[in-house]
Length: 282
Image 1 (cartoon, rainbow, N blue to C red):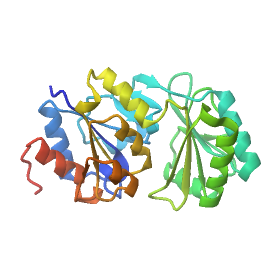
Image 2 (image 1 turned 180 degrees about the vertical axis):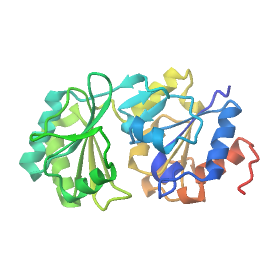
Image 3 (image 1 turned 120 degrees about the vertical axis):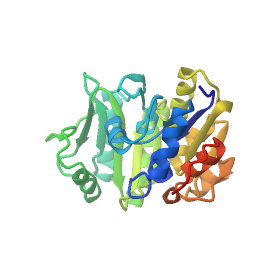
């Protein structure tokens, strides 16, 4: 078993832009795991979403999910959780309603640790596009009056750039360091995402916890990323690698900037050479 821990972001990093995995990436990943290397992912996606997207990959190590709000084993056991309580969650909703007359999507856990995705009774056009992509997913529900859950993993606003800026300023002013705010432009929907998390619910804190769980240290951790929510990953990793399509800020903090994009199998090409797997690209 390798002492190194290797983690990759998913969207626009390991995954192609169409959310697929190439046969080459699958072969490289699975061969590396079979040889005893510890590979995992750190993503904004949920356990259910990851399970569907990565069903061809051999996964053994715990997964960092929902921007770092959860760490779960491959069989769905929670080993780390950082959630906002209902009081803070409802304060976020009240501030947003007063500031920009907007309601969010809420991702949380019920009493049985099952994921729930709550959406407002009147979703905006950005939210509706995302909701439609879930089709008949039983986790996605709405009520006549949207309220925060007891265990909120993340509260997500999908807004114009102007509204996003106003909302961030209001939330920082009223809630300060009781919340963590992540802002980014969505790669698939033309809007800005404002994600509200517990202060300990980002990728940096989750990576530090995972390193403890895996009995390794930052110097033996390798991470791949492309966007703002990967900056936290880079804080507690010994080797920080950005794909060619990564944002400028991530490239500036990276140890290595790959010459390939996510659609060119950047992560797999690096691992194939770095781990000396000698797998042909076909």
